Length: 363
Ligand code: IPM
Ligand code: MG
Image (cartoon, rainbow, N blue to C red; front, top):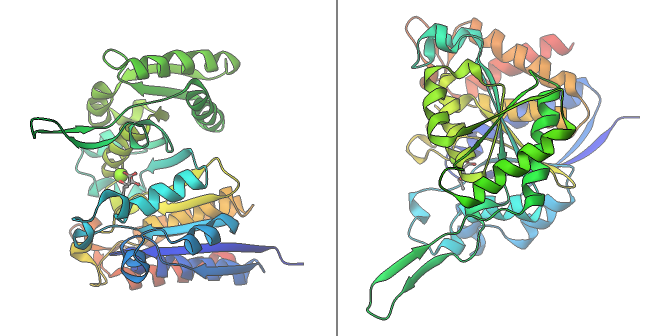
């Protein structure tokens, strides 16, 4: 009997639909080759949903996401919606999905593919062999803390407020995820905070240290976020797993992505709830949308993570990474990772190259 899975597909805005189309190609190939039954339900999210329904995360979209085994998301946002009230902005769809699905643990692997060592803006010996996993807390911290907003004071001046909040249980559960992830990798966790200034992350440091007592096989270190940002470009290979707050993780994962050549390469998995969500870490890149030049590899590698964490086919993730490596070795590059002597291809052609190689490997 074939295994059946329900997958909610949320292409979103900008280059989202383009990269998701290529990712779905890959899903369909694996479905056929591995004799699976994948039920894909597409739904609007982000600016596209706002335009169609007046809300970035319509109830129907949230409901299909809740019922699915896994959610695949492209990207949301764009200048068209930037003047909307915060509650109606495309980004709210993403934040709403994360919190409503309880996806508190965001895994963002920054792994360099050997053929791309030259595409990094850092020297080859600094990034060669780089393999970092950023574990970002995703449903708490300053992204969700109350009070928040902009208020007008009696004298007519305005004041903007956001609040950094973490409870000990929120910290403990993300620390456990990081230690468990590290156990299957280099057994090294660096917890990143700003404990010298922010009380909340002082608590973070304390709770991570306490949680570590049950993980004596893992080496734990702590680092302030400013130092971490510096170390990431100075000597990134010192890191194995980085665990950090929602906002620090947002920033450091973009930085880590660039070490690998392009933000267009990095997938992510958001775990911790009944199901899970997979998305490239890049944004909607409205400036290149609709031109067939976006890099679909992050979306394709996100499908790999979906097979690993949601669809019980860990080997597909391994195969997909090999296939991407092979296609890069053959010299195919989208514009963001292009270097001299390489063959420039568009989003669709890159998807086709990966699809062809994958078919060969799975047959
Ligand atoms: C990300 C993005 C989002 C975030 C935005 C689009 C809300 O930057 O997934 O990293 O800040 O989490
Ligand atoms: Mg980000």
